[in-house]
Length: 329
Image (cartoon, rainbow, N blue to C red; front, side):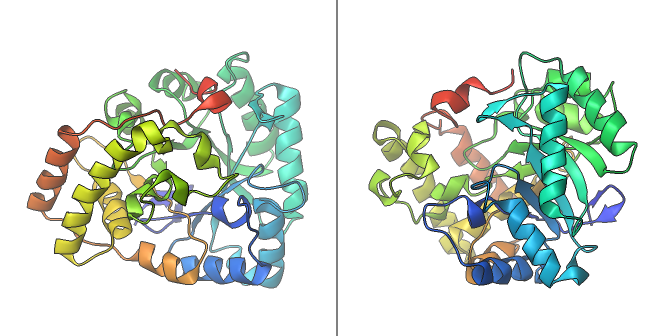
């Protein structure tokens, strides 16, 4: 079993973004059912965000209510929280970092400790050393948070960060159509410093499930409308990858989502890779249960998938608009 901060966690975690950051709000009851199902399946690493939703309904307000109702689950969950944005832009200044962490703690209202805090993106105007020093000296060493993680960082930032303080984990996008970390030095840097990788969007923001067949399937107002990979000029080409993966899933008797998540899990500790923990997000109990089912992949299965990936080039960037400007590196 993987360990973070000395706590055993399941080989797959649970992303909370989709519970509160959506055009059609879920009921509190439905959210709780999905969260309890995640725990029942052993997914006790939960990934939340200060900005996942509105000021009145976000990951932290939901978690405060959840742990008020189920206080016995608080010790079982390892909670990772992303923050550090201001007006939707990275702000790693000491003032904003303090404001962000203090707000997260206030919203949780003592119902659950923040085990790991990450600034969601690197502020290019503030040295990472300055940001980390505040988190370490004022929050970790005083016991207000358990540890510090990194999110969407370059290999160079990882190398700089580990010289400042203890880093607990690194969160980056990893999926069958997001394999950048294995060629840009990030995976190698994490392995070098024994840092687990928290792999978000392991089913490609839903694309790899096969349930999105055309750009129009994405509702208006959905974040994916801004993502180049989902745009009309790229969609058709990317759908070809999905169709090839669907063939493998059918042969293995699993869903495309199960194949995608199991593939990410199969990379953990493979070769020179560090621990890799996918964190699929699911809003229904059925989907949580589906995503938790691991499908063992043989050497032949992995070779077939590798062959497909090597012959396929994903069309379009992972982020578009202003979000693309805030990528590290």
